[in-house]
Image (cartoon, rainbow, N blue to C red; front, side, top):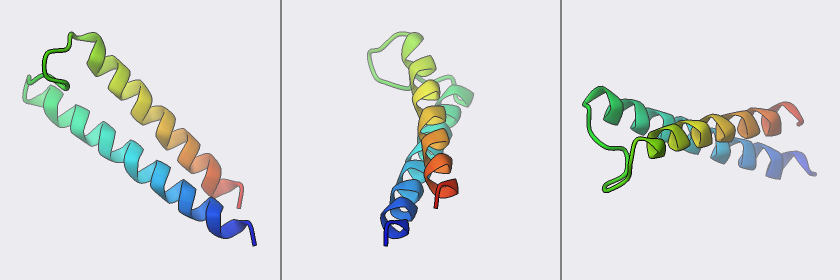
Length: 64
């Protein structure tokens, strides 16, 4: 009964984390700012958040 919400949460966290990492990587490759008007620390924060979302997503999927 509880595996359905865990799979859904894991999928959402994993997709968002992967999308955030893909966006940050594409912007970094094009030498464009990740966030308009933000400094270089915003890119590091986006990469850290994307990695954290992926880890939480995989944790949710493996705890099923």
